[in-house]
Length: 567
Ligand code: GLC
Image (cartoon, rainbow, N blue to C red; front, side, top):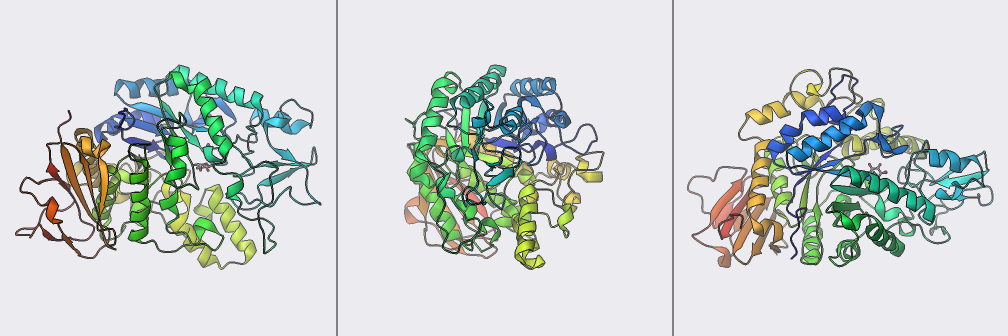
């Protein structure tokens, strides 16, 4: 397998608005990030994925960009950004920018021109259509509820927005527009940024003719992902982006691509494809979503068997052919300890177990801010405390549909993106040390117990466990490049697998629940040479290691062969 720095990296994702406020306006900023670089270096991560910091009216917290080459005032200045980049580089850390190429803000000058008249040269930078029989041009539903079309009286046409109505979709069929995007990307590369996360990149091409989706129940709008996700032409666009812009730079790229399995992902990340280094897949993020048509908001319970099946298939299909991006958490997802672990009695144990899982897989691990201290979901009683546009739209649509309030609020408590967006909990002081002002969104009530200050002081904390995982990963080639063999595929409680390269072999044992199953060590893996590399409990005195009774959420990694010393 080809070696690359981004395969050996651990990425830390920063959601700037909620990370650290330096000037007391209640909004996180770039100087706040700079002030925490030492913290991140101590954790051991070497790439920072910075969510959008560009100029933006902020209808979707920066994913609605109104100027790609300027910094949003509340986040700071371009000088602050340059300083952040330089300070990160000084500490051997890289900065990966989050770039939104599927849409802009409706306040972007391109869109202002585009909507001004039908014959404006930039009209075609976006996707405009006439209504059909006084209705929407087609029946596609937006990711944030309602139609993808917004009517614009000035020219009596509709524009498309797959996300919020303040996020009009760019028209990638328009070459002049694409050229302008290239120019902008070159500008960031010239500054020395180290990579890009391409937001919603699977959706930049829409099906020819924008056909209606099947609609047996004659609903006003229906899910139509197949018409705007992962279409063949996206690959042409990405190849061209590489040929024209990216190929000269030693950067890392990751694309956000919902709606695909590992075989299809190879079209993006196959070693010979020259498109993306890795993609964020979503299969495991839909494990707890039902099929009622309300997507993620339809809560169902997930099973370990399904999780194993999905993750194992990504591990094996991509092995030697492409590369995985491993995550349980980001700014769009609930907190993993609340979702896949136990945020009550076993918060620490389960957070460490899930971390072991992510860091022992093949692929680049992504840590989302706060995950390293086991931050949990938040439960706001009132919708007034929520800020996320997706959540607010869902609430409103559910109300109009007559769905009982408690059903809606329960779904929001479990799935709202705001679960991940409450302020980073730095200490047990006012506002968890995030700001000296009024935070833009309330702090999670548990900050007195769950915070960085406490975590740094406790050698057994989740934080120090992450540090150890990261340092082990840096030492062991088998963790980065080794193959993956699933053990006990049908066990409903234990997730165990082996990672190995020629000279090194590791066994990972994870108990996913609060029961105490017995792990029967496979005969061919029994060896007196075994060495416990990391675990979230002390081994029990007198335990029978080959018939190991696992404690709730217990995780262990054994080195069976080799020495885990970096070659
Ligand atoms: C991606 C981002 C999400 C954003 C959306 C629209 O899914 O991760 O936060 O709302 O794209 O840009």
